[in-house]
Length: 92
Length: 83
Image (tube, rainbow over all chains, first blue to last red):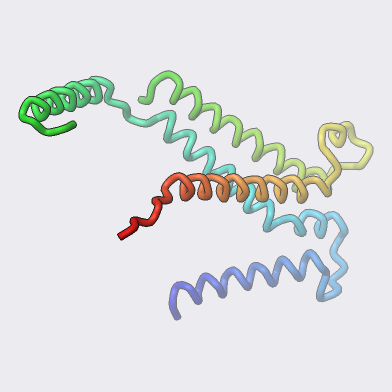
């Protein structure tokens, strides 16, 4: 069985469990509060995944390994190279 | 480590997403188990909004992505050369 089929199988299994609990398809008469919590579950998982992605992006922006001296040196070298090429006749 | 503004922006993103996650979790998971006359309910909108608001946010996000794509494609269109 391919990975895609495995994932689809897992997702449809979870979807079936969710539908059974939220819409009471087997008439198990669960307490109303459990049904109220289960129903927005897919949306809740999506929102929490979005929050996790946002937090990861923010954290990695804050802890990015800047090398300011190297950046400045690189800008200097770019200027030098442009001057050099301009002298040699290239239109920069 | 990143400097100045980068660090501030990054940390504020982390804090914002933590707050959003906590608020939404309490709204969806904790509130149904709390008695309806508890003072906690005053801080949260009616539960229907816990589905409507993320839906609206998703629509707005898709609109922004679509608008950005349209602007970029519009700026990069080149007139056809005439032979």
